[in-house]
Image 1: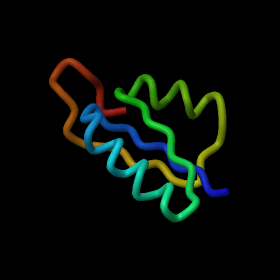
Image 2: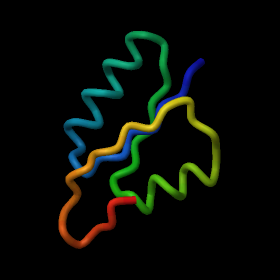
Image 3: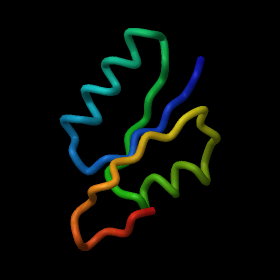
Length: 62
């Protein structure tokens, strides 16, 4: 099963994407910050990463 990592600080966007991908038998995991996304990438490999490019000012761009 393909696995996607969604890095987005907007939980509603991440949830919508998770539901969309699940309808196509694609597993999606969500990280709410670039740092959390990097931690998940250290744990496992993903087939695709979707990252929000507009994080709040106190976070890094990853």
